[in-house]
Image (cartoon, rainbow, N blue to C red; front, side):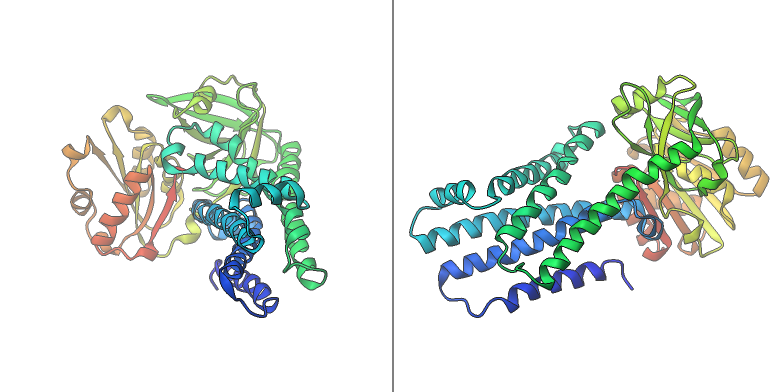
Length: 425
């Protein structure tokens, strides 16, 4: 069964609430208010579902994969913002027609005199603002840390909007519908609290992770080695990642995702970080002994997806980090291709050569600009015989990954054998 099926079934049940409480619709005012009720119900349902996608639920993180969950969350967030905007416009317009007054005056009256509407107005502004800063053009101009803090406003928006839904939602009167709606929101809050707060706190106390070493790997790239207690109990798999929160003044309020760049060792974990902003630059300057809070391991970009004997690991930039760990552990006949602008940008050259020699695998470097390397599909066909028979693990910047997927599909690789992890979560 698809993981998306329960969400679709829930949306259908929400529409059924409106249908059973609606006898007939006549006139423009009722059509508009009916549209407002529908979009309000769908927005109210979508909000906790979107929070659950980011709740770090182990079943979803391991079964679906964090990158896919993030894409669903991003798509659903745009859907939610659109629903809220339509809900506000249609409700205000519909009531304005009913009362025979202008939409602006009707909107002011609703906000100031209806129960819970001031909170609902604030929730709407927070959601619309978050939607604006999450738009692709704006997102490129924001650092990860700034975007992360602004995104936390959605939690407050959902909490503020919940009271409005119960107070003014005509389809959520006393009875099973209200109980189910309340259970959805309270259950979401409990799961978020458990997996986002309690579980990391318990693991933090159990494993006591600290920075053992920060080692330069290349221009603007360092590896961070963490030590701690009972590390095997983390059950970290090659290809997975942790969200690391370093206990320094600059970094203690942000938890960024970093992939394991080597298989987990009983006495240490290694992560490799590229200087892409203020957070990663501060990581490079950390001193040994810094305490670390780690959430994870997360992700389905692991050997569990492995099905065929011939495997291509294709990476670019810091996307090579999870592939480096998989290269050492995946069974089968492995070929690793690393895309980089220059020889100085290639990561783990000596390590990869050592692993390749030990297990009889192949390593290729695709160096230069796009103009110099030519078409990616042509280059891969030259480097990887029988490309269509390979299973592919792909990780890199969004533009590279999109180009690689197109090239692999054109070469005959089935979509189900292309395992993709985005490094732009």
